Image (cartoon, rainbow, N blue to C red; front, side, top):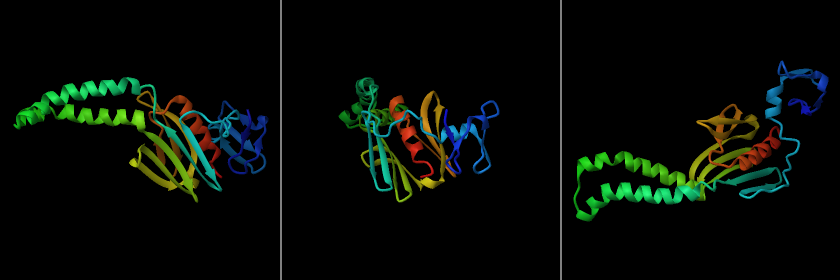
Length: 209
């Protein structure tokens, strides 16, 4: 296992690494560092940025870069027909009959609100599984994270130099990435494990650069 100091970037010798105490000592700059934090800032030695995978596009020009991952997955094969059935059966029976008869039933409409909200969430999730994308781009040190469809979605802007490490976490049994520094930015929900792995390691290659 090769470990490099996050201060001077030089290799830390194995005899100066203590796995049980989670420490690594750099003789070059005399820094005592958490071993786990170093590993979280280092890409896998087997990771190759030139190797492409389906659904992930990398673009680099000069010091600027971007990585775009499609949220499209096999779950869409289940979600698309299920969404049509759910929305068609639940909303048409509650609101469709009112529109067809030209009548408004307040009690029936209030009763249907949970179904309406659930349908909106389900439709959004289904559209993400078909057309969604997760994008991280950095231009002149200014970073933009986007999660959504087309140009509609969630945006977060920050300075890339403030990101110190990248971790992979679980929330409600769903894996995602966390960009940690002066702020924490979470992303990657809905991406396959292969796409998460690629994005995580690619972003780690950009730390402190």
